[in-house]
Image (cartoon, rainbow, N blue to C red; front, side):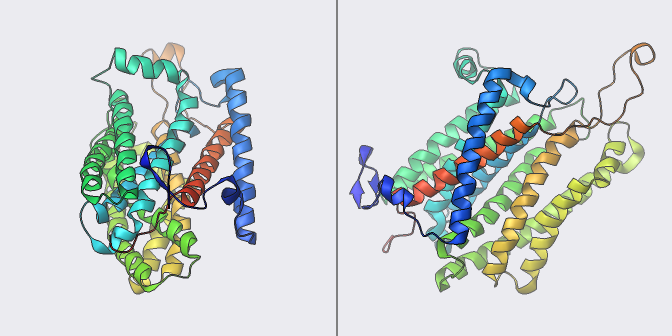
Length: 396
């Protein structure tokens, strides 16, 4: 182990050569080529955005939030989920989960950086935003609190990861707990951005601040199966199997609660035929993307967990890949479904045609920047596995 800047322990063999030196299996080559392609897309997408601004996106005044908002939510939800999973071992002291703590906390840093990258090209003026975020804070704005809390959360995660690398578990626990609390506050605040939309009755209310925390934990467990699957090439030792079995049992409970939440959310939305809410809920129920979310992120993983209560980690790895696809649709549906129903103008008869559902499909620029964010996330995580020892060390 060699010591880098700021007393950061690095792997002895870490170098540019070690990054380029990986096992050339078909799967690894496919991932490598895909990452390079996605990073190229990011460069092209950002270039188009810088040339054309928001005209490069398919967002409109009627549908102002597009794919980049959904992808940002996808990444920050993943970050919070990683943080929760990582905290099980180093903060709350569950010994079976300590072996994943460093990987999960590093994953939380990587995913939120990817989320910040994507949202930077949606905001319009990210540098101006950071300046006036300090000079003229909007204390009554949920979005201001979201940005501020996530900035603090990232800072605490980096400090916690530093102490984990140095095996200073006492300080790691302090900053881990602080980061977890700030992260949960930031994430529930992100849910409140939707819950405060009084003009959009399909999302307005207390549901989303709590729903975001629940789905973050679910996302973190899905990602834990994926990163451990790649780490051990699906050939798990007994200690890892015990960890993954415990996570699978927690996941079964969480998905069951999520199904319960979503069922009652839709029932209460449709009950009574409330205008601008009931018809939107019925429209959502008839959409293929909603059922894709339900089947891939809820039904299929739950059935696999119930098969043998998490004793098949390889099956759970594939179920988690399916689950993450479903989680993406969950985020996309959340953003799009909120804007399905057009807002009514005051003088309906004189100026407005009968309203119809708002249609939206992301532009090529939005898709390229979103895929670029995924490519950046995978690259940063891979470089981290080469630079740092993310496995649990004996005696700690």
